[in-house]
Image 1: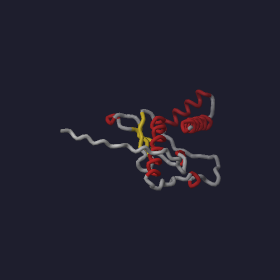
Image 2 (image 1 turned 30 degrees about the vertical axis):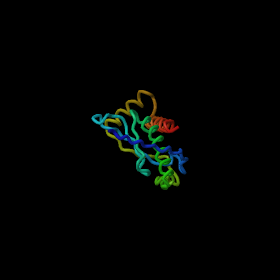
Image 3 (image 1 turned 180 degrees about the vertical axis):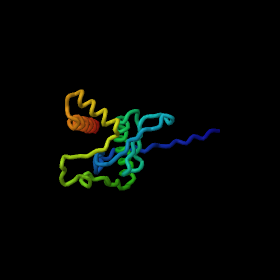
Image 4 (image 1 turned 120 degrees about the vertical axis):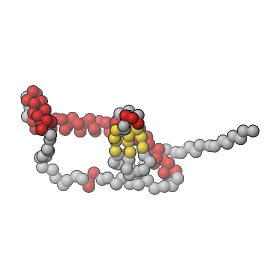
Length: 143
C-alpha cells in the first residue's frame, strides 16, 4: 500500500520594499565554464538574494526578481529587511577638482595613444569619451 502525502504551498504576497533595489550594493561575477558559465548575482546586504544569467544584464534582471522574492518572504515571516549598508554619500567627496591621475600598463597606453592619433583627438579627450560611454551604458542597464 502506497501512502501519499499532500503538501500545500503557501502563496506569499509581493511586498513593497522599504528601500528600492538600486539602493543596495550587489556583486556580479563570472561563473566558471566548468560550472555552466554565465554570471552570478549576489546582494551582500540581504543574504539569500542570489541569481544567475547568461549575461551580466540577465543576472542583474534575475537578481531584481530574487530581491523582491526574498524581501516578500522576509516580510511574510515577520523578519526585518536590513537597510542598505552602502550609502553613496559616504563616498561622494565634498568637491571634485576634475583631475584624475591613473597608471596604465604601457601596452594600454600605447594603444590609447595610437587610437587618439588615428581619431585626431587628444589622449585626454579619447579617455574622457570612453569613460562617458561606459558610464552611459551602465546607467542605461539599470533602467
